[in-house]
Every structure is written in structure tokens, then in C-alpha cells.
Figure 1 (spheres, rainbow, N blue to C red):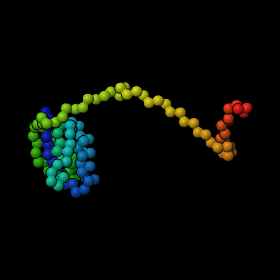
Figure 2 (cartoon, rainbow, N blue to C red):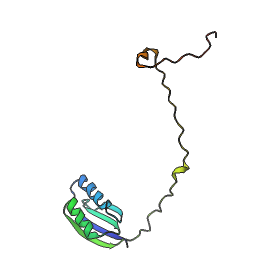
Figure 3 (cartoon, rainbow, N blue to C red):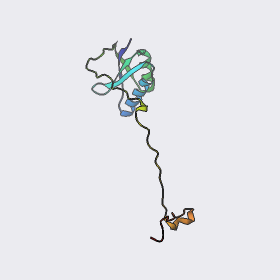
Figure 4 (cartoon, rainbow, N blue to C red):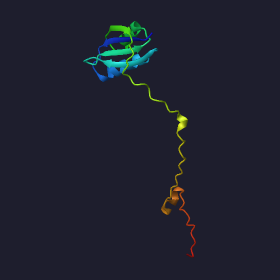
Length: 123
């Protein structure tokens, strides 16, 4: 059963917010994570997770956290269906690129050799 969990976490900077998102996303059973609220201080989690363990993990890693709401996740009718996934083998492989360097004759002391002229000297 998927739940919607809202946790208020004291987050004063973007680094704290990204850390909170990382802690929640690393928890098993999480389907989606979002930051909400007027002061961007609420973490909204949807998934099959233990809300108490999640809140205590946020307290340990980020800072003071309070569990505000736990309820059943509702499916929105307005959401778009996922886009069709195109398999990787659909695209043709790229062609190999051959690079030829033509170095001037003055650089022969580095081991480079000038390209020999193959045209006919009579014409």
C-alpha cells in the first residue's frame, strides 16, 4: 500500500534540502520525493516506507524533523502516461571516425615525417 508522507524538516539552505532529498531517495520503497511548503521546508514522500524510521533518519542526518501527515496516496487523473521507451538498439551505431594529421616538415625531430607527394612529376 502506497502512502503519502509529509515531514517538516528544518532546512535553511539548498545544501540541506539536497541532503534531505538524498536521504529520503536512498530509503528503500520510495517512489517519489518532493519539497513543498511556503518556506520549502516540507518533504513529501510517496511510497511504501516506514514513516517513523524515515523521520528519525532525517533527524539524524539533516536536523529537526516533525511528522505532519501520513495518508493513502491518491492517484491523480491529470498525470500524463509515461512516454514510450525507445530501445537502445533502435539507433544505428555511429560510424568510426578516422583522423589523419598532416604535420609540417619542420617537425621531423619529434618523429613526424612529411607526407610524400604521390602525384606525377611530369604533369
